[in-house]
Length: 111
Image 1 (cartoon, rainbow, N blue to C red):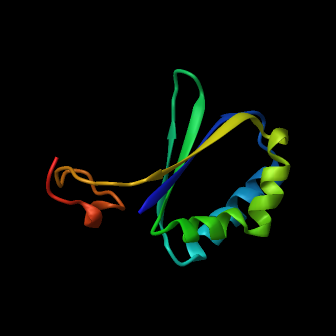
Image 2: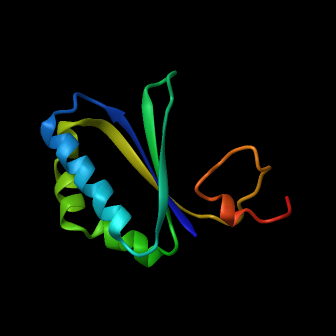
Image 3: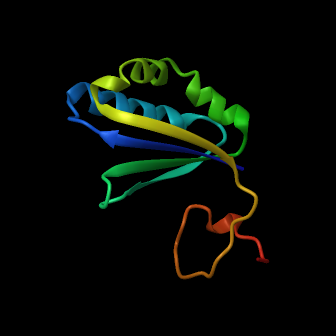
């Protein structure tokens, strides 16, 4: 399993941003290998993190190559005041059963 974390600082979002964002989210959800996503915002520094989970790098690459994703990436400076993407291999997922999380079925014993 892999995660792609998109970390960014916001500028002003407009209708075009929201349209592209919704289209990209729908495209991601329709791709084989998409496992889910979550969003976090750091109130201290204003950064936002969107974390997408994928079965494989090939599945993630399908989103990266999607035309609407490419369109949004080309126009990112209109809405973002900087960004970073972190691609990670998920080695282990574990915890107790108190948090209902999309990766709960991936929980493995140990650690």
